[in-house]
Image (cartoon, rainbow, N blue to C red; front, side):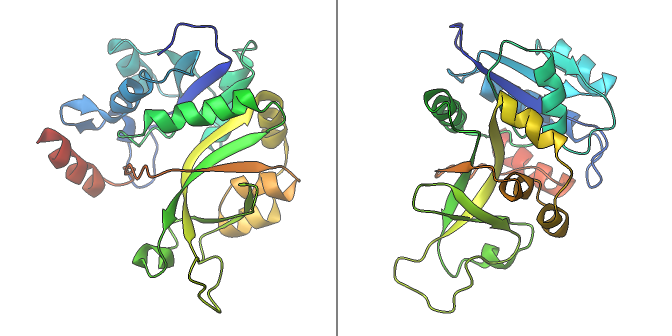
Length: 248
């Protein structure tokens, strides 16, 4: 991680009480806690001025400190990682931008994080940024409601996010392409505080996707395209598969 004075804060939210996988951040994968895998990857980033793990659990905090990481303790009542990241941002007033990094992607592409941070720094008017993978028509993941899809306008900004297949293929042009949303977000500081101050919006509550709150309130979300398909860990079964891969 660069020692130069940058303006971007990297926040890795980590909570104990995952519904499907309690204690997930400390689950060992190839002999190392999941959150440490993410931390170690993020240390390779060049555009983060500071990196911290945001948690409300002392077990996670103690483990992060033990491997030399930085911890920011937060309230236990946050409904999302974005809300947790906003509380952390309050303690770093010198940071103009915040990257909310998923704490369950141990193979996250550090180049992607640096690109998101770099684009935010280079474009002061850009309030929010995220990423997506191209998916070919006919790929079975398109029908999976757990795979979030995004449509993108000609300027590279998000038009809509959905668990449904968008756009609906009434016709199939040769250049039709779908995009799978990756759950990483970057915010301009003031927009992050605006975002968490808004009430959950109608479309957000309907789809269960918080990024729709930004669009419903007139926010602009830039979508960076990436080939990074690093897997997330949502269940013990996925952790076991990744453990076998990394152990080899």
